[in-house]
Image 1 (cartoon, rainbow, N blue to C red):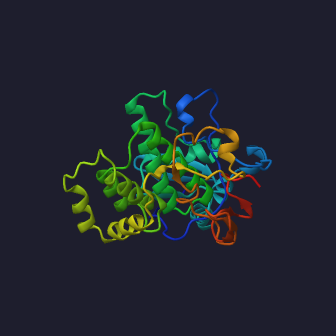
Image 2 (cartoon, rainbow, N blue to C red):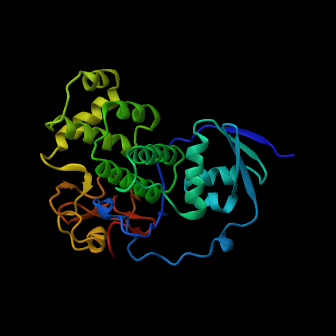
Image 3 (cartoon, rainbow, N blue to C red):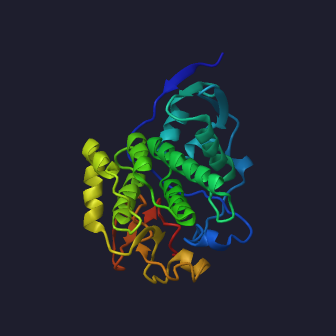
Length: 301
């Protein structure tokens, strides 16, 4: 008889490599911020060779989901701990996420797919994709999933906001600051976007931003940091390599930055502190753009 365990998310730093969806067909303006490009992708073993036969059952809300233990081990530290701590057949209760978000996680585990907003979608569908991405990012950081998975989701979030033609508003920022851990780069992105929106002609000062900054000290600190880093005209939704010849997105779509000014591509990424990173000025230092011994997928080796 299977045992049942209740599990809240495990806080802490995030960990390791990427899986992302490869969509066929022409996306037109959907590629305006660049598709995710894996530079020199490694040869992956067949799924049947790696998933094993032991499974763990997750109860999320009223639904049950089975995932192979071997697949969990490859997902990052949080899920690796679950795979190591619980015997095959155990039922683990996840009470801090929803079935819809957990289904997206399973899609990534077995199919290497992430939600994606495109220019051809109806506005309601675009908004749902964006909401899915934000919720999946919070889940990924709460459970210490792979760094490059979190980074790929963040890039999709930037792309979705650009395609929709909006920046994160105060309401979304409030929700994210309640659900995401303090070290979440999604929080940083929201703060930077609010600063950019504050300086835009379309900003409507209805007092909601001031109210949020008063009620959330962490939001206030991130907002001040974003003000200090703000560059007029730089769009936080646009990953701008400043013409770096090793940029994988520019290699795939040479004109995707035409008429745009953005922020350094890895600004809202988290990488292995043991790796070498390319800083915005081209210098290298430890701690940013290499993850698990490989260069971030946004750069060609």
